[in-house]
Length: 319
Image (cartoon, rainbow, N blue to C red; front, side, top):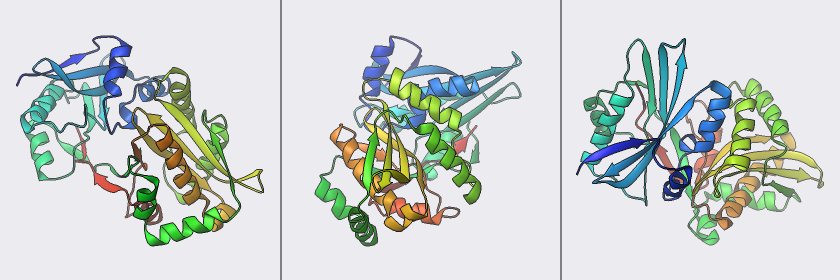
């Protein structure tokens, strides 16, 4: 079973067709993300098609940046991604990462950062070690919500407290505004920046978010997009808002903000619930709830787990 990776071959239309065959795509592997990272941090994408016996089996996006004409940084975060929901055989997976090791050397003039989309565990750790990678950071923990379920199944899957608070939010008289081009994103990112200062966490920068929105809305594929959902009190005053990026068959909950009135009304539960249903109507199959950390953000973690989604953790950050 020969395994190869073909880099930057074919047309963008062919790449987009493969991208749409990925059931649970991740935001950092989207071409729109590469465009935004290029404009913000100077990265250039390399698009790889993983072939097994000559047939496409998976895809991955590698970002590269040269500094001082000598030093090269490479990162491959939350990939590779496999086509048609397939789980690759162990040999295919190992050969893929051996090829990646050759493409991403780690030495004084070349620094690599890989966050493989592999489940945490001894098996993944051993595989990556055999391929020459060294772990230097934790994996990515998130919650995936399966939107292929019916609305009734999704509601039944909510934690009891989550469901009760959602009922309260539905009775609070809030009006939801769905902005399918995220036109008011600069306002939301200002709220996010102030929230991050108060709660001492590191947010996505406004510049990267706006450029990602632009790439998703204007230059992305037919299934890419950005959605900003706001909860309005008295039909005009925003008390909570959420930013969602769609990338292929999946979407990511990227930013959530709520003021005191919004928190009392349970507005973020209403936003997340109604947005999930709106994305489902547009063909999104999976919603990535955007990362959890039980140690430093217990409340956010409990909120996301309460949706009844699947908690996952990846193998770690490697070089």
